[in-house]
Image (cartoon, rainbow, N blue to C red; front, side):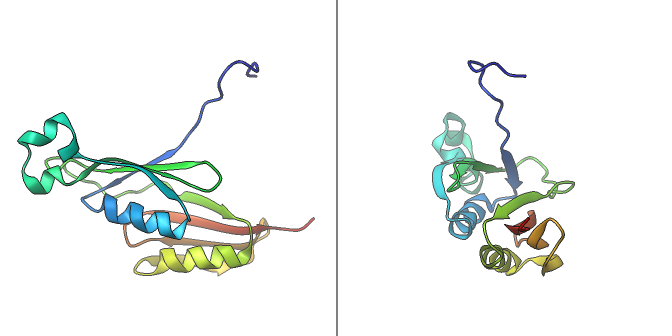
Length: 147
């Protein structure tokens, strides 16, 4: 158990992209009503001076702040590092209502692939699974089940 004066650990997702991080973070910002707090390109760092222009424009670090204060971070793999697609995880997203879940699910599904359409579940009024156009898997929940 933590004492009151001990900071609690915070866990945040850090997504990797292959040159599409800025585009993905702009999309996630619109879709999740989030604010882009930071977007730092390799060109903006000391190592950027020696990079090819295309490599220098990749995103070294980006951070979105969601309305609830949680954060989503991301970056592009460096141009000279082999990129492996994201796998073995899912971004669990809980929205207050089924309508909110439907709006976000539909946006994530556009250009992506639906694994499980949004439908009622025993733990939420709506649940669905989708991999978006950037390769990020999402598990979307909407509305708690009334007790």
